[in-house]
Image (cartoon, rainbow, N blue to C red; front, side, top):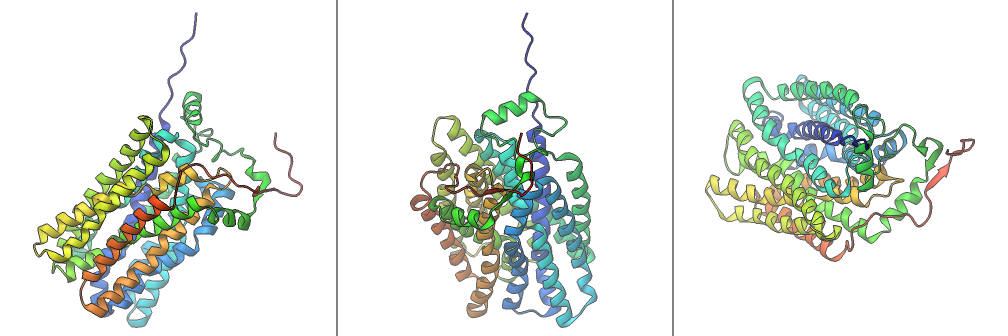
Length: 453
């Protein structure tokens, strides 16, 4: 008599739901400044260039903290590192609401410094998402998983842009920061109670762990008992080898260009609606949600299409590149907004553009596919460093374009051109997508550490 094997649990999807919820709050907190931006700009009398620098403050520290954040993830694991990340960025978001107690240069300085602190605190978030996806999801499900947590950036706007617009309208711009920061602190403690590695999770059975491991998941990556506690990463050798790989460098540059679209949407888009299209802040908050709905749907669809291509027998390279290239082609349509007058046409075209951007935003799936098992956090951090450098350059470049021309026309061309460069990177630079392996070992045994069992 044979005993029936227990059915595999599906705890990985619960983990993905937590990642999605946390990333939604993450992006909502980033976007608070954009929703409150027109009112802050008016009250503080900021020029477009000054506003561009305030918008970019987050990205300066976010970029600089990426490699330290990746090191923390590889050293201490995602669970505890990510908890402190959520708690701290939420606390600093709450403190943004106190800027209203200052005036003039003191208010601008406080605004800039707090955005810097939020950026530094958020640094481990997306590399952490990538590590967790690598640990919990087989290759054939990883595209969908990465697309879902990445699409939270659009869902954040869908859910919170109308709410934040209403808060600014009803209670003043400070209320946005108090509400969103408090929500994030609450979420930090939910994270602490629900997120574990596959082998440590109390609700994941052996059948699920065996299934995801057989499919390519790095199930030991987040284990309490991993050998990493007895070893040390040779950081500079790791960075040198990662940047010396043409495939990874193409992926990193492509992410910079994709994030140019992201940061236009997170910073200047509501101002575009208010200033160029003459909408009220309340209306802009609701209207900004429409392209975000399209981006969210595109983001999920891109991951599903990619994984379906893998299951149908297509190579990993074809499965990941096809949605990216097609999606970026659609994104260039935003330039059409320079030639139409009707608001409904502008929103329709922007929705098409962000639907395409959503489809093409598979970079984190590619990182999960390609990151070396010894340094998943560091690879994700490098990817995010390149990507979020766009958070520094995009708001400032657009600020200078606006100051020079008084119009968003050049800004939309600038953003659309970055979508074209992304296509070039994936078609001509990346080559075959596969897991990177170090040519020279980067893990060094700690002096006096016991041998691994």
